[in-house]
Amino acid sequence: MGACCSTQCTYKGRRHGKHESDEREEAEEHHDNNVTSIGHNGAIIRLQGSSSFTSMYTRKGKKGINQDAMTVWENFTGEKNVLFCGVFDGHGPSGHKVARHVCDTLPLKLSTVHRPQPRPRHGAKTESDKDNRPKQWEADFLKSFQELDKDLSKENSLDSYCSGSTAVTLVKQDHHLIITNLGDSRAILGTRDNKNQLIPVQLTVDLKPSIQSEAERIEKNGGRVFAMEEEPNVLRVWMQDQDCPGLAMSRAIGDFCLKDHGLISTPQVFHRTLTPKDEFVVMATDGVWDVLSNNEVVQIVASVKRQSIAAKVLVYYAVQAWRTKYPGSKVDDCAVICLFFKKRPPPMHGGTLSEISVQTASQVDLPETDPKGKKTEEGETVINSDITLDPKTIEAVNRANAYKRSRLGSSSRHKTSADSGGGTQS
Image 1: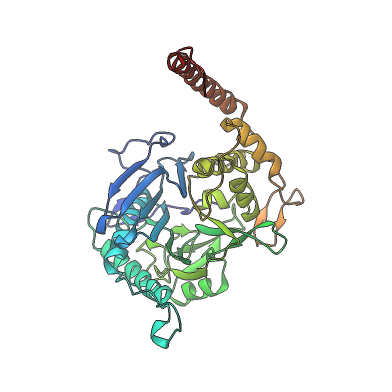
Image 2: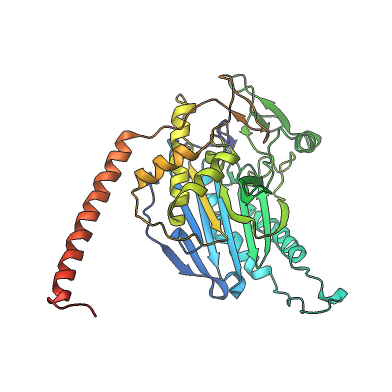
């Protein structure tokens, strides 16, 4: 755990402040209203809200402006069977601007680069019928990331010398998942094992300087990797001759002060063929993964009755976990996209957010750890702690839901009495 960047950098004689003077702090949370627009080749771009198969939500932490960004493109590349999802985590003085630039630009560039391939023919397959779509997507992703980083270095309107962004992205085409990761955001899959138990499968690798091969590349190029005394467990990347920026990841878009010292913008690309046992994917920034394990995340998402609010409930629990596990630290920004492969049946009875949250809390099995924390099977350090509910938040949600129910109930009674007319049903 720790901030993505440790210190500020001096560049071209100017000291970067925490925020530029003309910027205003964002609102505490986004509204749940769906915000969509039309993109390249008629794709439907969604920046927040939910659809019949996606749930997305972001919340600002306590460190300043929200530096997380996210997007979903439906009918990607003009094909109805293709979907793009992306979550981006900015860092540094202009990290929020870089993350939003990447959020807007990467899917557009990928959509422009990609050339749809014909589907394999049914019946007897020949070598020419081989499904090469995953390999084509991988090549297109690598090219898009390379061009995006190169263009960003020439973008005078964005100061990305000591600012950058992570990126975890996904393309779903039919039964193919192509996932890319750059930095320490993460994507996991919720699937069923042979005993029909829901389990997490981590689809990406957290690219941090704690990975030996990553550290070796950085040091080979003159960069330095070490932890600060106050954070002995967080390895960071430093310039050769300056104690900055102290980046907690080994790959990122931007951060050009480190690009000559081993930091790269080449993502790792993964492919998975979906099976009937696969239920959903969760993509999130490190504000979630720093405090919740993979197993906790899949159990929370699976326990929520309405898929449309899954991302919001998950962020809610991440915030509670931050307050409980690290009371002396500032809560980090959180952004989540949940992509569902199966439509759940509607609940028999409606429930308030508090009722759903209480049910979720009872179903989450927290890992057994000693008070000092230890490594789980997933390689995460988890501090022994229970997730608690905020009584003030629950009370406020209950009041709002009670008001909505009273209005709906009054409207329903009025409509029933007006429509019945004293007649009988046949």
